Length: 338
Image (cartoon, rainbow, N blue to C red):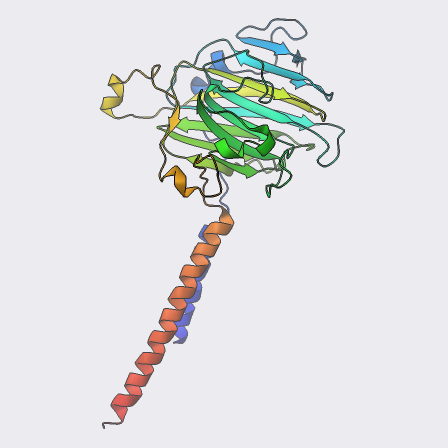
């Protein structure tokens, strides 16, 4: 029994170690310069700083280009701005690294509204969704800093992903809850260190990771399979303020090509003609807390994995103890016959 208990404790230690967060190298790509696509990247020194034009990039609204950052909005009310790549992206597998900074004078819950990263068919179209248009075609990653829904249990700032074929509307009053695919909380505002976000799309899998804790390692935020995005869309970033405000700055956007093998049948697909969508793993009706029926799924968090493994471990221990008791009683019963 002592040896068995020791083995169970050792197994528990291994399971708990696996349940904890696992650091990821600060570069998801291998960092080779030949994988950096400069025609889709925004880096210092910015060409055209202080002017109304930049090579390969267009900007509008309150956007201001300085030598150190691209400010989408100043810390002023009712401002919106955006910056968009002029070159459509025809890569099927890519990874975007964004160095950003959201900061301002507002205290807790007295700032807003947030920043959005886009890979969409439309570009340079102002609108109500963090300074860009609603009912878009493509992918949006929202860095929402203000909770409009007073009943929400989320911790803000909150990062979420949305894929749209033009038919869905982003509901600001619910912080995009009904159209969110997955999301996570991230303490990314008013930090004294650099803050980064990585968005990877490869073979139908969308991954979003953050590096906002000054640890030089990526932390899982979103991981969704079954995502279908066309090629030929544009990368961009936008931000908006309302009654509350913040500075929303982009320091760099670096796009890397991922060298990934695809099935032979993919060669026959015209990736510019496919529609943005997400293949659901279960019926949208299963999402009972969502009155619109949209399915929202997210990766298992460390706590969820921990609880699942803990329940499994307790089950194993109970079975082992019961088995040992039964075995001991049988042994005692057999001794009576001698």
